[in-house]
Image (cartoon, rainbow, N blue to C red; front, side, top):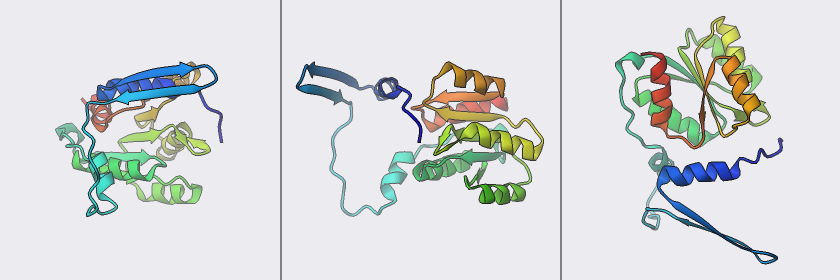
Length: 191
């Protein structure tokens, strides 16, 4: 477990801007605070005939553009959120990548790496439970004896972490982000 980083309001601010919403705050001493979020989206009731996976499919469905330079590139994905893992696999497979989902447990991690002949790019979340993406990226690079290009997805904007990412030649995108932003960042490396 780790302490909070005080990033909550900055993340909310970016999400509000990203979706074109407005957020207002009313606060009264000793009574409380009311946050009001207004979005440009209509309210709809979920249908009862949806299966359990269709909600996730709707959340992660993006039309992934194809880049000839990315076709059949091997992408390692390091993530601990099951919905994101599924979304990344669908999105990046549709974009032409060969996606390798990297397990977080030490034994499964090593077994998976032994089965992968090559990796062209590493995509990782930063916070992975009590571990972090930088450590996984370093171990993968050591295993392949190569400075494989990498991208960290994080909400952490601490200058120390940003400098650490730069020192290790790891690109960074800050949450919240869309899959097409990740794809665009990856594609820059192969242009």
